[in-house]
Length: 272
Image 1: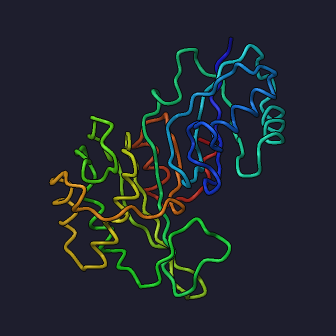
Image 2: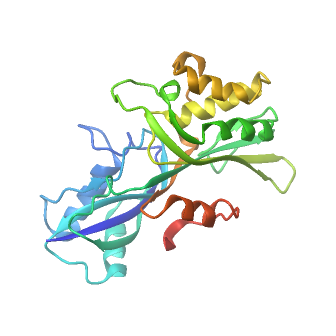
């Protein structure tokens, strides 16, 4: 029996989240069916690296699975798997790992990015953004989001209370502006890298940033809300379609940050 780590991406709009659910179309279900078909073993179960909500996208999500049939040619395996998978999922890397490896438990960080189109022109081709017509002060938003860096209790930014552990460590957070060349506005990329995330935590943080900007509040309000542990003080959850899991990482998070965020690089993580 051999264990493999699979890396894949998908558009979340037409899925009821990543985790398998009865009578719902999910990423895990589609991947599991495709892999079972390919390796001709219906008992194979893939283990996802984490759960993503309905509508959330992934640029680099991961899962592991066991098989008695070794993958001898990575290219042929991925080519065959992608021929079976639906058009809104694509696998791009498979790696043989140790038998004790666990896609979720061994992950050291997750990098999420929420994208806002801040423009007087609505998006037509790319719907995986939040459209905001009113000009936003991204510098104010960036100053506010820096307050969440470090180890904190994020109770104020979660939507349900079934998980008793609410402490997370945020390694990196920022708001970056990308100017649209034709002068119609810009995109704002809100990056957050952390060891773990609570249910709807990123969407709540983005909603709070927009609340602070809209009401022209001090960036220190973010710290006050964080310390309060009171969900009622934070902003609403923004819609999921602008949220993308950029990376589930197994390397040192600071090395990843220095390579892909501190130097403003923007690339798909197929080489990591």
